[in-house]
Length: 444
Image (cartoon, rainbow, N blue to C red; front, top):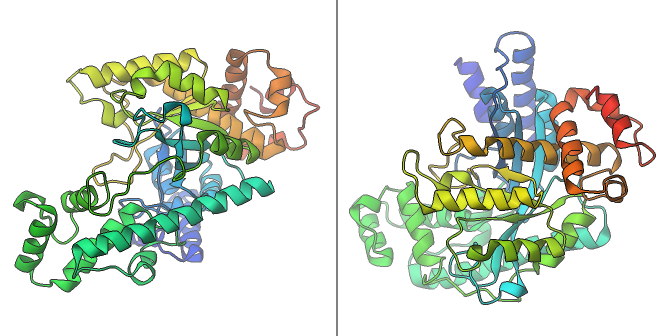
């Protein structure tokens, strides 16, 4: 790869949006001029990649994530961030330049009253669930939705500041100032636990410039063994700092409860008001709550959930079938049987996360038809929501489809055929059009 391309790719992660936009436009121009070969599209995708707006372990901006997805030949790509949709405009614009199908989502944590005594997918935290809203095409215009979105960011900041106060007492003399040490690590002020962990690692290296003293500090504070001391901020050390100071049993941990996070039903309402799809998330099927997935999904669907998210890579080891793999097969069968689009990805918010799932493994191959159908449906939702507010959960959809199976076929066809370069064909559509008329406009 030429030095010029490497320089532009590095510039894609600049915190200055103008610099990112210039770099991407320059790279696209190189592709259009034939200086960089346009990759062939492959049957692969990642619809769950965090950007640097909520911590990407590689520092990728929305533009960089889109560019690398293009280079890998993705069929579709999806950005997701915690508690914000700050990637929205940049990511969709980048994918439009690259003629790449895109989806933007939000992830947060919610409280599920019906499962208040059972751990769901947030380890050690009964009633708490990671949860999503998928397929944003614009920032929330509904006043209640806009207020809810703001409240998520405000709550996250309060939790962060309280967390740092508790951890500072434990890590003294290594202490963080949230405004000076943490926020500069973010492009738009949305700090996560992983930003805080990185800030502690860097502050410790500043307080203890001598590597031996730094190692002794971490051994005393978090019991770090020599193998964990990837100084000053290696993956093992960062994960151990997080586990020993911020997770259950750690010095800064406080058990969340009913009032810590919004109700799942409230987040589902926010998603619907914002033109997105309320989406349940799954860990690995081993918790008390996830052992009752049929019950959990029906509770979730009763307040609006209409899609299902999985991170496949943490649920199997190639060549070693085990109970987690069987759990994965079982939950995909369950969700697909309920006509919930299944979306997948690799997160990209922890060192070691793959850029894309291994679709060529024997374990994943049987699931590929369901996974591909999933991205097609939610991308079809985004296309029609953007074009005329005719998204997957719209009134128009309820009026035009008698069953979920037919709805999924329609949105899947839209998602497959409607690349960004073809979306102008949908200009002028509206509630007056039938599904057949909309498909005809795309030649589908």
